[in-house]
Length: 310
Image (tube, rainbow, N blue to C red; front, top):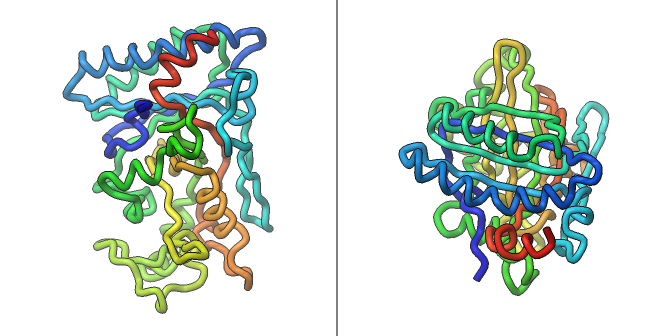
């Protein structure tokens, strides 16, 4: 059985470093070789800094996949679903390679990120780097707990990982979507606490979700806590973290799933709302500035299948 990248389903860390690259012309062969070697490099650092709980993910952009591995493509991989509705925007960005590095030590993240950039060297352009952090007890910078609806325990793997019977070559991989949101915290802080709670659909301090009938139709939890036609919850595994400095603050949103559909359904519900146009009012206070879709293949694919193509 294929082995998944353990960073996909790992528990949260204190620090995150997200690296986004575009591959330069005629560098595909080098990139395949370099990425096939990264898991061993990550294992070495995880052993060297065992107390840091280092976890990592390597993912390939939907627009780049066919150049990266022309022999086969994950069955459901597609470009990021760019959406616009008045002032609510979910833009699409072109990114070829995504490297996620998380640990409980900022310096370890820096060391590993530097090594990744040295290894990829002049084969890529670093288009974005985001250093993120755990805020209080796992809260977003809005003050609300982030990822409350995340699956727990073994159910995380059921939600996040492709099943063998669905796509054998890419089993234990995961469909990944990222968005970097920038918050308008000045405007957000101008609201009273009850107004903020109504926008989220749960209490701020003790994180108690409103009863369904008491939620505004524009509440964030109303727009993202969805069910399919059979009444089953539509789920994704979030590995998001806040980021920011004294000029800009926000959330680096990360979603893993065994299919790209749940993320797209949730995003559409936020941007376009229900049949009566009740959109997610949280989007009045935060704006997605980037958006990209990837596939994070299994460790088995990266270390055993990929080298045959490299």
